[in-house]
Image 1 (spheres, one colour):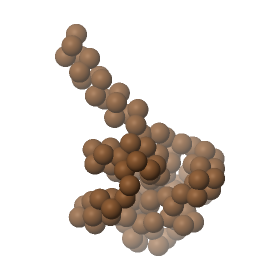
Image 2 (spheres, rainbow, N blue to C red):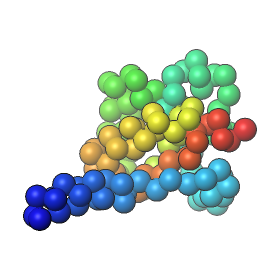
Image 3 (tube, rainbow, N blue to C red):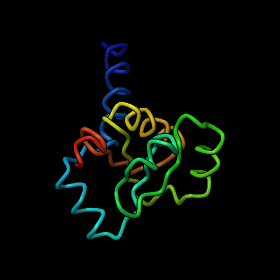
Length: 114
């Protein structure tokens, strides 16, 4: 039982710190709280279209990704998105491991934004 609790407890904890928001919730929060969302796609994807005021921090460029987030206040909320939602989930989990406490992800990614 304790083995299962340990297993499921860790999974629950990780999932519990990432909040998935639909397009309307995400848009409302970034506007209301004056948040600059983080686009974790490649620069060419970003240049093909992105959410207004988004900052491009390519998840696949691990060195730059880590360097950027080492300078960010871990107590402040971070809003991430990618093309469809899979990459931003990986980025969100990485941010939790780096010590961030409030990570928000756009459900369906940029594809759902349009």
